Length: 260
Image (cartoon, rainbow, N blue to C red):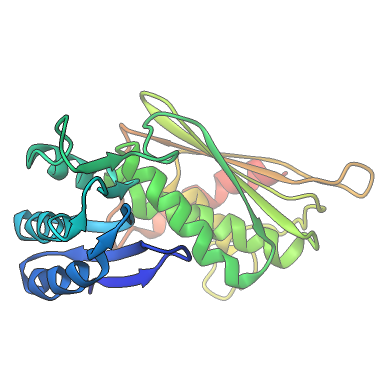
């Protein structure tokens, strides 16, 4: 994934996205040196930086030298694995002119909740929120499965609920994570089926296939508000890419019981 550097909407604040490695470190160092020149802190938002190596760290150190003291280089909200590299390279040592600021999303093991507009364009933001939380809370081996299930639940809420917002909550525990997708609409009951010619209900079937547990509180006209609760356990085996027809029919049977 190529590295991108963009303004974060405030003076002397930039957002780094992608991967900062040897292939781009020299160009990044030059760009950051230009941005760093002058007085005041330079803040780099690392919340979307997925990888950094020693050459990337050197680029950050070079930029620090261009900031007029007492200004500092502030590295804001790095992902957990990026933060580990920064720590190993000594960037968070006391007295350094580089400050690693974990930010509100830098705390592991905390329940988090976000609200998103009930629009198709917001689904990518829902996926990014869940993916980031999964990485921070060390559910990375299961991240793709969790993101897929939450995206399907979010899409159902956007398409069927007719409400202005979709609410997503993330609650990590030692052995599992629980994710809720909530709207304020009514539940559209569609029976899942593994039949190849069945078009409706397949998103729910997919959610059942990749998560360990799913429950639904169905919103009605008298009591609107649908909540889809999903659980992923650390003991889960990673699903193969191919799967099997037997598993598909087993999941369809489970889904029928949950939806009934």
